[in-house]
Image 1 (tube, rainbow, N blue to C red):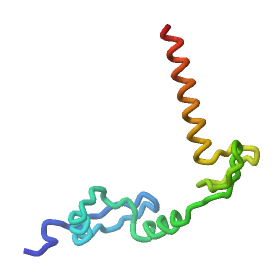
Image 2: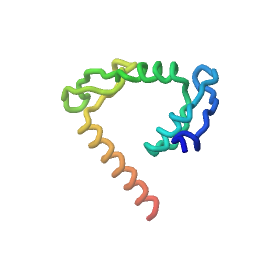
Image 3: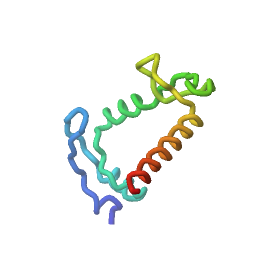
Length: 110
């Protein structure tokens, strides 16, 4: 029995370009062997374009608004006056915000 006999070529529609593409029996077998559950959503051409488009991550050098530490963030700020925090200061502010939120909650319960 041929390895691909339990699989049959399927015609799918690319979510990007809207064109039909064939998901071959051998590709289906590969997906099955690797435990991949999702059916491909893009044709080969759009898949290559998508990978290239998302290959390079954007990052911007920053100086933390609180402590002055230098670092990088994974986006380009739109506003030059935007409050930008390093990881440590961000975590500290998040913790302070959560404590303040919990304190308000405790006061309401009294």
